[in-house]
Image (cartoon, rainbow, N blue to C red; front, side, top):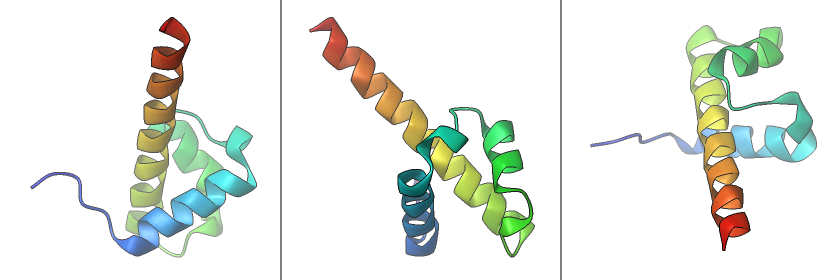
Length: 69
């Protein structure tokens, strides 16, 4: 079916990126460490870190495509 994420994961990831976009990168392990102990559970932290990674990679890809045009 694909990568279906819950609304909680998407909303939290977007809010975190809006508040501090420089704290996160396109590396999952670094994002996981950046979230640290702020998340209530390990699986939720991993899902949010993964979604943030995906968003950062997609925005990076879009920016690169725009600059080549």
